[in-house]
Image 1: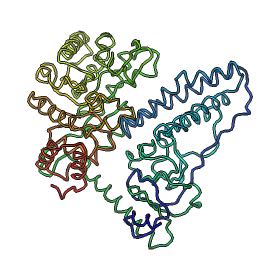
Image 2 (image 1 turned 180 degrees about the vertical axis):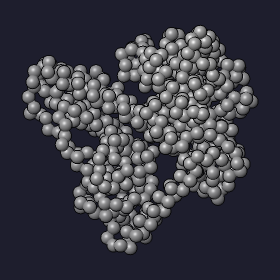
Image 3 (image 1 turned 135 degrees about the vertical axis):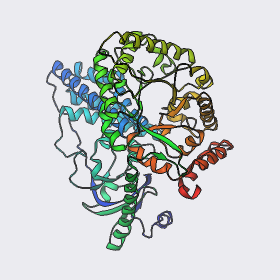
Image 4 (image 1 turned 90 degrees about the vertical axis):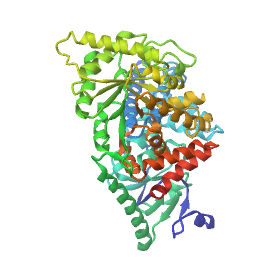
Length: 588
């Protein structure tokens, strides 16, 4: 216990200590979550055909729920976190998992429930016995999918987390990704789990949502009695049982101060994003569908920096028609007008397969026929999408952005396709031609050296930092063994981003970032110092980042850039950026 006292910054002895994975102080009643435990081993089969139908129906319903979670997570949390559910989508269609279930139903005459239990049990055991923390945590993904399938087949009557009656501090053995994303957030003050760590899904999502969380707390579910008043510090990982009024007042005061700081951010609603010396930048939002528009309005984004159109094409048996797409684009463009809306053309292939779009199996699909490369092969599909965007541009606030561009000649081809679409639409009396912008995503390093040439065809470029970093360091960003290489503090990557900015400014191109790093606070002063004008992020981050920008000057951002460019190691880069943010106004 002496060690615990030394670790805490508070004047009270903690009850216990875990791993602080999402900062913040919370005070409230403990509520222990006891998820429903399914026992279906004795359920008898109703016959092969009936059981196959039951399983396929359950599979389809869970896939639809996952698809909705992907969109919800992209809008409210971020693209990287949404890949948790994109992985679930693929797992639930994986033949190695589904094949044994079908075999058990057809050949062993098991019920759907028993077949699911048997197939998942084997796979879960493989992951749980791994030496890798990361792989052991992935067993939770399988448990999540198994529970969802069984819930569809036999709905549980036990209360879940989606509707809580009062604010609580949630205590659980562990939480699945879907439980974390669908829980009643307005009533979850904080999260405590027995399992998990910094890389767990609970930790990742809690951090992004701003919910204080402590993981890896032994016996947490048996430690607290019902309605115990507790406090936690999600930064240092300490838990406190509030035994007296003085102690409760201490932690309540700190929680209130934290809440007051969040409320101050709301005063910036409707204001421009300015540094202390009045240098202006624009903070845009990333969205995946028209359903995200409420989040954009709530977040007070100054425009849409990335509208991903893949969801229009997914979960369908055929490609969406011009009318299907027109309805969606028109809704988004008109509701946001006069704010700019950057709509990305179809980014298919790689990690975004679409069944009816036939792309030959490739050894390395991330470097294969994807995005623009596919669209230039299927010109009619590409033209239909472009025409729908142009038709929807009634308020002249459309910007069309093309992904996976490797050289200027590709944008020359795109410009020719767009010009053809305009010429064909002009023959339709319903079409009212309005100004629009055409731009390219910078994800491939070679394009940085052709910005002078590409300016003949585009008026803006926006950096897809996730892929640019991945291609720059030749490391799969989803591979946990390569996270030390896939590192945004990499010296070469930082210098590349600076060179990109210099080249774009010299070519007089509008310059933005639509990848995940556009919204990460440690990097924002650096991007401003480099000259990036538009930063796009998840809608919920916008107001907080506007507050952040107001705390430092453009001059100090330029000095920070100079210091970072002189760094000799990526740890120096990280230290300089985090130190700048932590010192806040004192460094400006």
